[in-house]
Length: 127
Image (cartoon, rainbow, N blue to C red; front, side, top):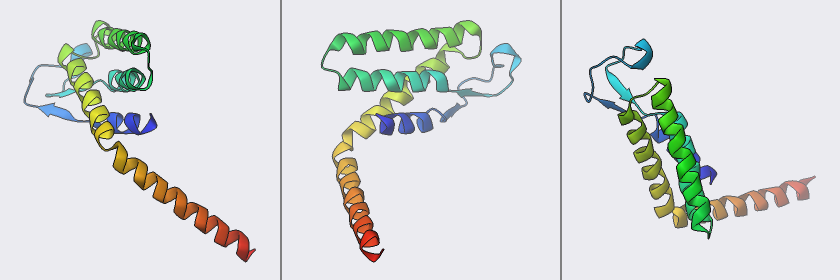
């Protein structure tokens, strides 16, 4: 689940230029739309829980709670709705990309663990 979160957090830093030239909520003047990192991270948890648990209810509740975080960010005035939509899209893109590459990631992790075990064994023999 950590792999999903790292990828999703990095994707949340993607900005969309040229979509909006208006001032940011709460007087923040930037001519770009920034995805909500709060919403991206919470949705990363939600997608992961939705996938990892056999029961659909856990994932559904997680998605509802993540949606409430997004609504709260708009209500408080720190993001526009398009920021939240971008955050949901970025988290879903991150989740699906890690999910699609899970075989390669697991093989690489197994190789790293094997190398670490061999190095540890060699180090303890030298001592």
